[in-house]
Image (cartoon, rainbow over all chains, first blue to last red; front, top):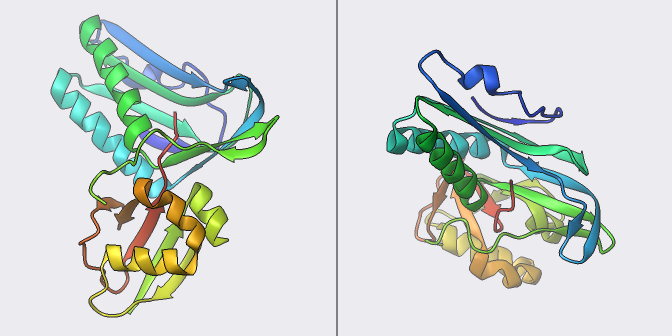
Length: 142
Length: 81
């Protein structure tokens, strides 16, 4: 499952989805809304996404990770809309027969998501409202 | 020919909308359309080097030709996660 959602995400939301009898390890990653950015206080975040493309890109990243680490079960949820401090913005779950592959694939999926998937966050706080820009263009061929 | 244009994050703030329909000439490319938009919205110039473009939900380069009915999206550096 690779979905953009508007409802709150709980940390165990994908556990049953990826846990199978042939898997001995489940690794989950939660991205959580932090109360600061550098020295600046953050009050809340607003996430926006190009939903159709974001779900497609997350699914492609998942498929690539499944292939590379020979794991069968990867799921990703990313929330959009207004998120309060402490809420989960992204949840990744990877299950595999042994732990090493699950850890590595999970790390790969969050890294690629942050690089490629068309989702943006706006920080609202001490400095007003600021769209955060990632460190580089999502696609270098432009 | 008509195309659908999507703007996100600070691009939509600069342009003042999230979605619009535009008329482009036959033979227009992603690059030529991008230049037209920058002429119309000079504040986009600051984003030019980091802006990515997707056509029909796939990242494309500036040489890609536009076709009637395409959905073109302007994608500032992403910041999900």
